[in-house]
Image 1 (cartoon, rainbow over the protein chains, first blue to last red):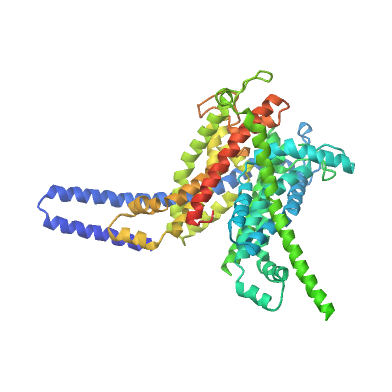
Image 2 (image 1 turned 180 degrees about the vertical axis):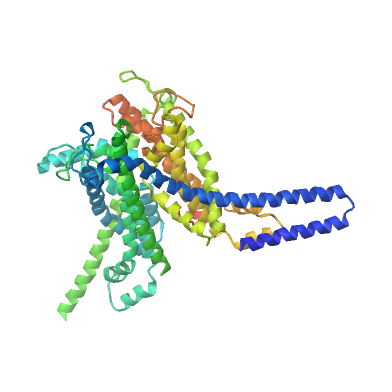
Length: 328
Length: 284
């Protein structure tokens, strides 16, 4: 709509100029007006080109990130090949690079965190979407849950270090595993709290979209509140809830600081969920500035590349599912 | 008959029980946030005094250290990031709302989505190769650039969503007056959507104020006060990370105080944003 409107505006102003030109006796005035309008037209073209440029910059930025990561990880791909991802030992001093401990650490922490947080985030979604969609009570809950996402991750890490680690340590003494405190379990707990808001807020909005005739039909058949939720609301919204969980997973995979502070940072393959370990993000954070060899640095960047690709794919699938859900 | 009645009673009780479970689980989510807030404020509020705000950190064992280097550094790094990201983000948002169907807009939107999900540590790596290596050393400027990349998607999204809500008649009326395109955008459209765009900007500042990972190998940290953006600079989240993982109690105290300041700043910005967006009803 805008380009046509624009052309109109240009021709209009030219016409009005013509009118001024023929009627006014002062030639200097019309020349000035003409000059100004010429400048405006040039400005207009310039502005439009700037806008297109801005759009281009966004695209270039993302492809630039991808290309930089690929180019910088070429040395390690060349030197280590694909088996890098399956190697079980990480010993930069002896030039042995195997990323499997970090892949396993990332997967363990993220999925454990999802397992812990999903019941809570779905509960929040059901509470806000179905039981109490309005009122100060649910407003309070909604805003508080959203604030969970606002707290900086380094503060979660610090709190985890000071409060959660001693608690986990005493728990570990009770169940008879080595009481280290830091480790995969502790970081999963922190991550679980941090990712609640993502699944919860998306879940709430899809649950609110369930058409009320469906629910009313179920009530009319004599279903209880829970039966409506179980056999109408949840099946109807399952793809949206799934998308929310995917977005949470994307967050959990890429989370760096809080995990780095409480996971213990060892490059050994974790033996249990209470063992200390490392994730892809935390090993980059810890060792990037210490990497003195080209292959070492490049191996770390390859981890970054894997992280980038995995989170991008997960986020894209999540976004696709949501847009299909909202369009249906 | 009685069997059916007990069956119904069972179903009703099950429904009530599960409702209770949902309520309990939902409110359990609030507990960690309140626990964190309470703990950090209790641990940190006593550490904040005038000396804390005006001194640079002292070596371990000396009393009276402060965090002024991190406060100033954070302000500068965030300020420069905002200067880079806000004009770019707003103009990109305008482009997206003006060109809804072009191929470039499709790709641009996709890229904004991708950028929103990029782990912050990856942004740090990229900023290292784009700025730190060519410039020959860690600098606050490279940290700002990394944070600007993290700000962009939020600013673009909020601008686009806000401008989508403005009625077309507004723009048509402006065009009918013969106003050129760029003046319509700059003088009519953007002022009308100002509070929505502002809330996006505030949200993005709140998001990057607590980011540590992109600064680890860009701004790097600096124990002294500096205002030179081509030199390494400290920032609040970096200081919290460095001191929290150190073994010294003096440094822990500094980190607690810094945590309170950072937390209050971020939460206040978020709450302000909430208030604005509730009036505008935009989804960020």
